[in-house]
Each structure stands twice: as C-alpha cells, then as structure tokens.
Image (cartoon, rainbow, N blue to C red; front, side):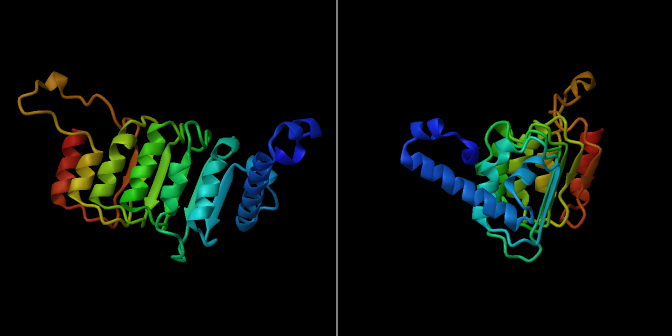
Length: 228
C-alpha cells in the first residue's frame, strides 16, 4: 500500500510516519524472502504457507502477526522449526500481535517443534478470545513443550471455539491434569441425568491426538466420563 500511494496522500503524512511505513514494508518484504516468496503480493494471495526449517526468530513471528489482517486468502499455516533455532518467545510474539479478526480465513494452524510453553499457550488463548483466527477448525501443537499449566491456560479458549474439529497435542509433557482441563468437567454429584449434558465446548471435535503424552488410565477415565 505504501509503495502505491500518490504524492498528495504522501504529503499528508508526517515524515516520521512515512519512515515507519517504509520500515514496516521492508520488514515484511524481508520476511517474504525468508519464507521463499518473491514478494509480499505473493504472500497476500497465498492459501497455504509452510514455514519449515527457515530459522524462525521472534522478530519474524512478530512481523507475521502484523500481517495477520492483510492475508485474506490464507487458509493453512504451518510453522515447523525442527532445527531447534526458534526463539522460546516466538509464538508468544506471534499471538500477542494477532488482533481481532486476524487471519480471517485460516482453518488450519499447525505448530511443530517450535517452542510454545506456558507463555505461548496463554498468549494464544488471549488471541483466540479477542477474535483472531475466527474460522479455526484444525489446531496442531506438536512437540511444543505444552504441559498441564499451559493446557489449562489454553483449554478455556479452545472450549469456546465450537468449530474445532481436530486438536493434535502429540509429544507434549501434559498429563491427566491438563486433559481434565480440556474436556467438559463432570456434573456435580446428584445432578439429575436430564441436566448432565455439557452446556458447551468442543461439540464438533472428531479427532483428539494425545500420542506421546503422559496421560494415564485415570486421564482416560476422565475423558470417557466426559464423552458419556
């Protein structure tokens, strides 16, 4: 947008604002090149972005967040930093920058081997609750250091997303406590059966992957009780 503004419009902008726009544009262009795209225009029209082993740093993900409102076509976003070079606060920076309505068409978000942890999970929960990723159906958080505290922070936001169909939590150190936070809590003892149906949460969920977690038989019993 900055590059195509006419002279009259530029004249209305203070020099400091013009410089900030140019700086933002240059950062976005550099990000596109790092992602293997020739231009920002190509990114703006992309339906699928796979960022695999590109050397993610927090600044890159923060820049990506600022573009969240100008990527109307993007439906699938894959972030996979298997090299281990990703900053530990990168996902937090991404989530913190996603405003209401950001990434409006994304139905699949897959984060793999890119640190999320407690801070990232809390930031992602806040982003979902303020209306980012409004069409999200498929969420993958695989090998991202999500434990019980992180899942407990994220679970309420996920339960408020009725469109979720698939949730992958493989390879994370979460256990029975985290799973209990995700599923519907059991009704209080003595609740009449006709009132036991949960009032909301993950009603369209078809696939929950807990491979490689620390869930035990007790956690499975909690899940079965919620399904029942």
